[in-house]
Length: 235
Ligand code: CDP
Image (cartoon, rainbow, N blue to C red; front, side, top):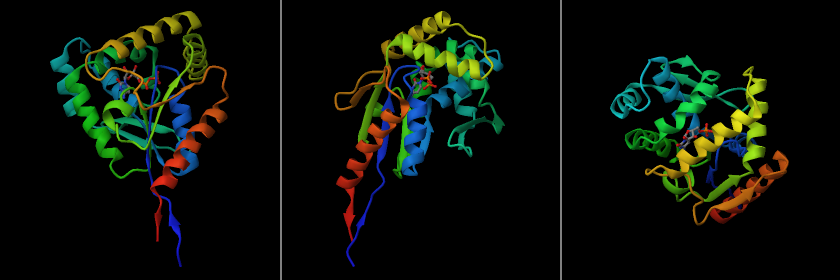
């Protein structure tokens, strides 16, 4: 009997803070039965630990040596989200604190830190069947991913989304301070020397301002299905 086998592909998603990458990536992964990988959580986990250890985030050698010694792991939970562990301790809530938000971009700009993280992220993507999101996934981590998407939205909309998320986790934040924080983070992320956030030439750009999450998810799933068809094997 002849049949077609759908091959797993890699889906890479980049974009600025609060563009909806996590929500979309998680839903796309759930729909396709793929693994969701939140690379920002890895930089956040390192930043959290650096702050908790009293390190100066400007001290690149100290942060790099901490990055080498830490065991950061991402584990799926029952609702499709990811739980973040540092040396076996669950820090899922802590890594999204306003303090980590303020300090994560300088930490992520350290080239040695990026080299370590990128190596781990590439290893996670080798088998395919992943939806990986971050800042340099389409350009540096898996530039040969079959599906590459750049998610964007206006800064004001991104700030509103982030405020909703932070407030629902119990953090009292204002829209103005959050807007300031994400603009500041976007500037550092897109101006750093090592693998800055950019729209890769061949990434599909989706402006999600005013777009319901379901439409964005449907769009990305559509791109993934096409890519799967192109890679499908006849048996
Ligand atoms: O959720 P949000 O978009 O606010 O941020 P995130 O994806 O959790 O990433 C937090 C920070 O980690 C970013 O602002 C970047 O500084 C850094 N990051 C990075 O440099 N490269 C990645 N692949 C992912 C995140």
